[in-house]
Length: 347
Ligand code: FES
Image 1: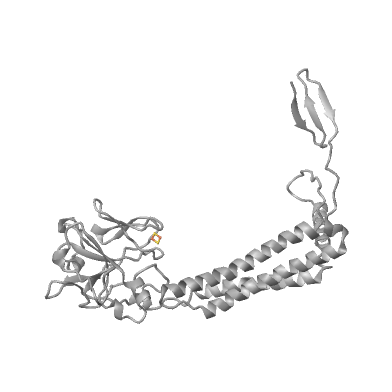
Image 2: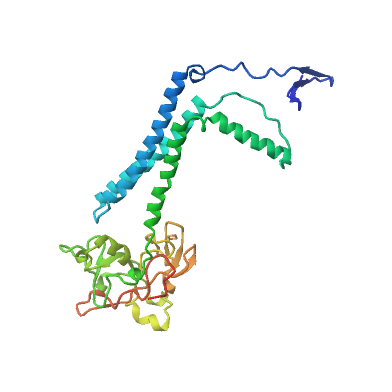
């Protein structure tokens, strides 16, 4: 019976049961075969042009992204948002894919393909090692042909120079800061609460307090949402969750007791972490859960955060009933809705 071991020199040995070592020569690598591009200058040139062409395609993809960003500006409709996302994704995909394929072709067809063994050595490098490393880098530079192939080098530089531009555009979308936009929503004194979906002119879905039974939950929008100029944007800020609890379960602060009506409470649906819609209500515990990162809010205590990354409670919408028994807002939210931001407390 034998076991196989590798010696530092690369030779292998077979350990026999009687302790004798039987050495044999390292067979080495198979003979190196030449690629077409190694022996045929025309094939090498063709490959060079293909690679450069792919870098050009990458540039076109980047330009497609930039042009699409301005031409397919998303409007209010979902279809325009889809078209915009499609064109941006297409541009970015083409740009990255072409650079990737070009790099693979360059390495496979034009760079040296000799296999070699590199022995392990200490991790830290002496000055001599560093000099050797520098020499290897220079050798790599020489072997890649980047100095000798200006067509590839220049198209690569151009493609890489254009690559960050989409990121600049995407970062542009992060600004400007929201300013007062999140301080103001469509809610105002006397605006009735309407069911979502259903809050449309033909079927306003208005909610009477008498229709809200204990334990029920409604997704709510302001009745005037359909009149808003930017309805989608306004809905994203004004969405509300309405719940009715047994009034004895509510632990309300003295100054906020008038913000609820007979155990009916309304809170912003926009998570204060990074703005996902909070939509999971647990009847037994009266907890609201955000599905994105599991922030959990306690409805009995003004939606304070009891778990997860959110840093502040969901803003409460003060509500009451009007003369016809419909639920109405007493005012706008007293604080900005959604994710926290630098200017949260400045108005
Ligand atoms: S967005 Fe709600 S927990 Fe992150």
